[in-house]
Image (spheres, rainbow, N blue to C red):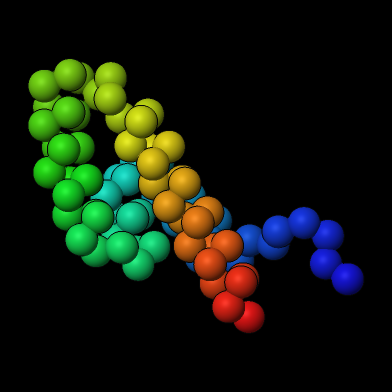
Length: 76
């Protein structure tokens, strides 16, 4: 019997990677087109706002990683 969700080492590392480079983390989560679109918005947001928009991209990456893990659990 499993209690709660279990993170693999790769899943945990992807959450940490999302703190630094959210578009790369989204790419590793298996969403390459979304990663490219996020990169197009993330880079100017970092440059022009001084990083004020960065937490929103982190949150987006975490949601996508979580969603991908739930999808893989539903398939098995």
